[in-house]
Length: 325
Image (cartoon, rainbow, N blue to C red; front, side):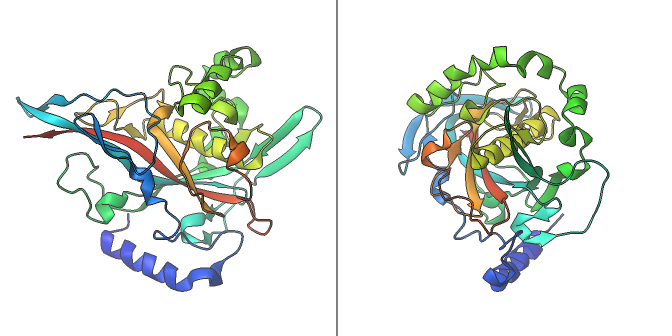
């Protein structure tokens, strides 16, 4: 775990290094220039949009004016407040053990499939990448919104998961052990229903949570492994990063803060409309993308030839809470 003081020192050192560390696994994340801070909008108070900054809300959650929660044995009445919280960073990297936010690569080995691939065959395309998940509680690190009961109590930047040591991520057949429902949803017949998910995203910017096995134009969420058959390489890596979110939810390692205004909840079947993703590296995206958003208009020029096919995504989640009187 990295304390707040060490985190600030690390950021200063990384900013000092700057472009001198650029390469396949860098440069390090710059929290000032690489983050689209407008993605925290829209902010709602009492169900009314107070600030939108031109940002969309893809979630399907309802926004009530008032709310009632329990504080110990005592109920209290409050007003519903919601916003989008930057809470984590997700890498999708071709080079195993490449940690993009730190511009660091470690030398380690493991039997089995590690390196990323992108191949074209007569039956289509196949991409594979490793994923790293970092806790990144920005608001707590910057002491923002500390008067609201919405944020997590964690105040550390931490590497929480890396798929190089997750056997099911590197083997689609072994992934069936953790997610046997993939037999039902990871087939062409059920993928026909995903056209409705794509239509909802294009017309309303809202993924359909009922079709949890679909990721819009990014393909299927199953098998929950590091592969994607998307012909667009940027979309393929976005899909692999989104699969990382789903895997964290399925493993009860990720809480959803938009299901209830009274606190975070575990949701083994993810609600994908509660998440947005912003590409930070190798090329910063000017907007956040909902899960499954077609890449026809946003993936162009997002992977420089010398960047090494390694990507870093900032994750935003819908945060709803009850601010009591």
